[in-house]
Image (cartoon, rainbow, N blue to C red; front, side, top):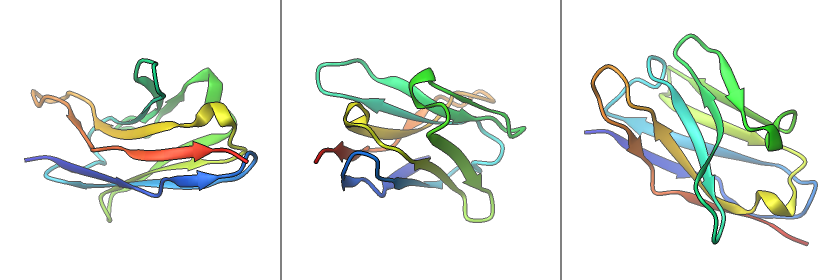
Length: 117
């Protein structure tokens, strides 16, 4: 059974930084494509960043140059470093294990990020 638990969200002023963490159990994050998604009120959930098993990454255009996704295989963790935060980054952020190797996807419960002065 896959379990993903996000942490690190909170309230931050515009221009500030946060680091989100995703603790995984039941899978090895180093061999799966792992993603961070977000959903703002009244909007659809969207991909923010993803890291593949080979280490390649991709980002939404809106966060390129500000956000960095990474993972630690030894700790079985996935991170999202968010810098230069903007009010429009306000959303619930979710960690996701993408469907792969015949295993369906799994989602964490989400962590709220609020960017406001």
